[in-house]
Length: 268
Image (cartoon, rainbow, N blue to C red):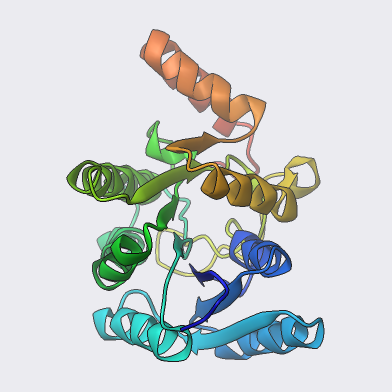
């Protein structure tokens, strides 16, 4: 069994997943990198190893239950333990519900919700054994339905409800569950967001330079795991949205619509 603590991170090929992989590795964790893009996580693994850090790449499509089971089996075979599991793999969308192909919503649920369910199912026994941390990278879209993101919001609400239930079921067993909502982060999630027909958007409708860098988000997530926090909401706008949701949800609806209407090519 590994003497180091072990973290598994899905969606590790880019954005928050890659940044978290680097952060946990730099802090002394053995890192299991999971993503569909095996070439990218293999390159990251080689780079981390060249820096004297410990990383291991496993090709994983989180929409496939067998892949998720294999990811856990591979991690246990190599390290003998799992201390942290970060459900980060995710995709977004940008289309109104009346125009979107329903297969787009299904794909978002398959990745964002079912990917979390499949991975958690097989990681949970090992996390209970280690008294470890189960992490879900959610979004403000998990607190507030966002216009043009029906499938994304639905998947994140579902993820949060699922993880809250897991937390309650295991509250006497030493399991830590963190639900993190990074807010708008500079990553490729908007470029890879699906259109109404299921093709990738290809460009971001927002000014990425003004957003929180993924590397900074990763530091916050690492610290939240170490401090065993229940929730993590980042950015002033994100925290304000959660507060207004509690105090005046109707006002938040109007503010959200006004904010999203500023996006380039907003579909409403």
